Image (cartoon, rainbow, N blue to C red; front, side):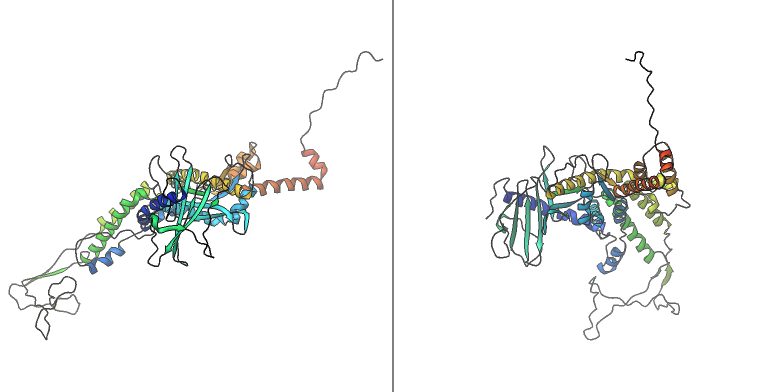
Length: 488
């Protein structure tokens, strides 16, 4: 039985586990919207088999495009120290953990699920090598100190389908405790009662002892999607969920009109339709969906058919067709509203954009670039925290508070404009390294450029000393002293 005394590892297991369980429904809802599987739009009441296919086809996924538009502009390209120089050791940890590609997974999950995480710990094969693992918010949750905002506890909980048990790890600043449930062959949902959890069992059947945390802080780093003060974080597309539902419903209505009203529909009045009866029993055959008797349909549209009826006062006619232009204009207006509210560039929906200039693209990018800058600031702080934990594991006495994560420029600039800018700022005295940074080069590439320039200058000086001497800066000559008046 677990010890439910407040602030013990067992208490944190149950507290964070229940919070993890409670947010699953909201995370699943956001994931359904992001992956293009939102709730089916509801049309007129009718047989389920008639509208179910329409409902599926009426969904058009724009929210994934909103997230991807932001993720495509987010790329960390290096880290620099307080002096602005490339931090080679930190970047080596980055490369060892394949973060060049995995960073996109972290950013995409954070923007589509409101949060993502990274856990930093020692590598099993080398305790001095930092191991960074991206984590999903379905399995990880963090608790913060309301006074300082620092992390005071974290939980990772998951279902082990090999051993068919639930497993969990509680991270506290001073200790790391591991748990597991009993065998759970019935499903992956984890229970969060005190009686369901116990200490983790090792391969030999012994209990896994609690481990001291050498980092003295919770090694779980959150990546949060631009949270508001006092509010829970929301995904990047939160402002567009209602519009996405509106687009799907409008699409359903348009598809219904296309099928039933876009072409002239026929009608008949005064004709007596006969029920279809079973030949053996003579009873009416019921429709399996509506439960009503099935009716013979003698009038079916066909180029070679002739409709005739023996009834009195029978009339045939047709309805007018529905104009779909209004549906199309409404659909376009809803998409533009979605792009505006989510700060997504309008040229992603280039219906009316023809012969767009580079200046127009920059103008349409303004709000989107501002949003990306906000994400870069928040995610950059998380990455600096991540590097600080990695330094502790590697035994490096370094402070990453003054370090800075360098990002790829999110603006879509013309290369000729960039080259012209670089030429002008170089002509007024900017060092080559600063010029390369303004051109969007990574810290590693800047170091390579400046080193190459120094090597070329040294080689030129060694091959032609006279030229090098002429190019070298002249030292100012000292003024000659007058000879002394008395010479003894």
